[in-house]
Image 1 (cartoon, one colour):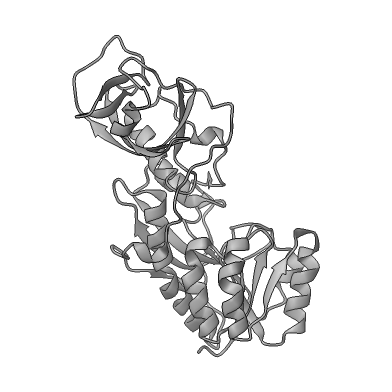
Image 2 (spheres, one colour; image 1 turned 45 degrees about the vertical axis):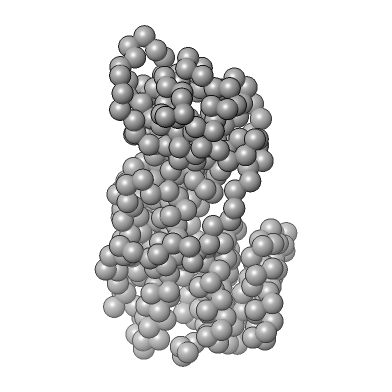
Length: 345
């Protein structure tokens, strides 16, 4: 147990086991969720109740007053840890806890500021992600850094795989912050440099649509970035709304007279091969459709043939029901973590 109590605000779905540990460690003086976090509430509320820790459900219309009341009515809260929360924190609330507000950001700062850095890091084919902790100020995601741990993004790594490994680094980051904030002197922090800033907010529906006029490497990166959180990268073919969840490079004959997006192979041996702009091909391995989550070979049974072409235009229907299972933090091993950059001194 640390020498101070924290209020935990927000709950990234993959971080639930880590938050559970905080609740059981008696360091947590309370947890705050917004009313849309129903699954997180169902998981955490009974555990908080068993530890006699308040679990506050916040409505956005009363957010400011509710947080103010929580912070001022509890004399135990000395710091706030934010682990995924959609609302901007008013500046007058940031000065209330004596040890400050600290946001745990699941991407590189300052490069990837926004609500979904993991998507854009994978989409942009970065080789390094990060878990960063910064002091919160009235400028969103621009406060000075206390902790930064680089986490490699492996080839063919999906959003879900990388997010799970970032979450595995979270306990060490929390332990470091606990030690840092118990020191008698103020921590030395690192100001963020204002260069190479990417808008890393959640992708729009258009961002998830495959443009077959792009090189294969970029299409594959989009597919990995959209799996599983966004249900795959979208494309229309023969009025079917397909979400590609997994694909790989394929090597075959050249097709000089064929337009990008065209199926160039479709049989039970090869599966479905699609031509990309740079005359290379990719092989669809897994896709989600209204008929279910299917392999490339199974897609042939839906009637897709050589010469059929995927469109690059956004599908008219923005939604599709996809029976994807929720993935768990325990389902992946935490490998390949690099040495954290402990900035605070």
